[in-house]
Image (cartoon, rainbow, N blue to C red; front, side, top):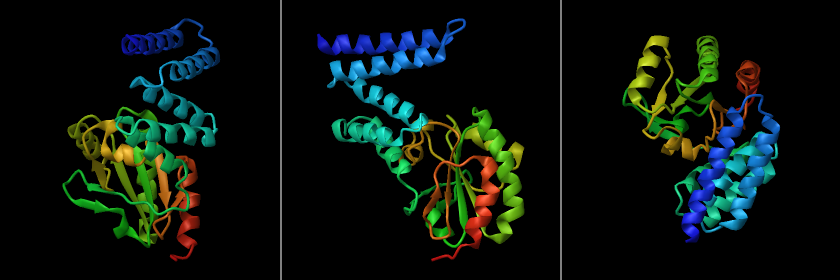
Amino acid sequence: RSDLIAFLTFRYRTADYSRGLQAPNADFSKVQEKWLKDLHEFVRSFPKSPDAAEAMLQLAIAQEFAGKEDEATLWYGRIARDYPNSPLSKKAIGASWRLNSVGKTISLKGTSSTGSPIDLASYRGKVVLIHCWATWCEPCKADLEVIKKLQDKLAIRGFMAIGVNLDHTKATMTEYQRSQRLTWPQLYETGGLESRLANELGVVTLPTMLLIDKTGRVARRNIHSGQLEAEILRLQKSPSR
C-alpha cells in the first residue's frame, strides 16, 4: 500500500531529523542539508500523499529563512495549487501573500481580548504595527517591552500597535496581558499558529511583525524591534495619500 509506505516514510524521516538535531556535537548544517534532501525526495516519490503538502511547507520555510524568497513563494504556491483541500493550503496562501505584501493594502479584522471588534481599516491615517506573538516565545516578550515604550512615546503622533496573540488558550494571553500592562488591542482566536489570523497573515514563525503606513499599505513585512522607532518616525512624516 503506497499510502501506508508514504505515511511511514515521512514519519521516519521526521524522527530521523529530530534525532540528528539532538545528537551530541551535532553538525546542524549537515543535518539541515540532509533534511531538505529527504523532503525533496519525499515530494518526488509520493506527490499524492497528504504529507507531501507538509514536506513542501517545510521546504518553503527553509528557503524563506535562507533568504531565497522567490523559491519559497514557488513552494507556497504549489501547495495552494496542488493541495487546495489541505489544511496547509490557507497557511501557504497567507505566507505567499506576506512575502509579496509590501506596498499592498492589508485587511485585518477580529475580536480583541476584551470582546471589542477590531478593524485595521478604522486606523487609516495612523502608522500601525501588527505584532504576532505568544507567551511561549521569548523574543516576543522582548518585543513587547519595546512596543510598550513606543506606544507611550509615539501614540500622540499617530502610532498604534495591534497584537495578534497565538497562544493555545485565551486565558494564558489575558493573564500575561494584565500582568505586563499591555494597553494596546490584542486579537485572539483559537488555534494558535493554525488559527484563522495566523493563516491569513501567513505566520510560520514568531515573532512576526508587519508595519503598516498611514494609507493602510504594508511598509515593512520583516522588521526587527530595534528598527521600529526610526521606521515609524519616517512613516509618520510621509503623506497620508
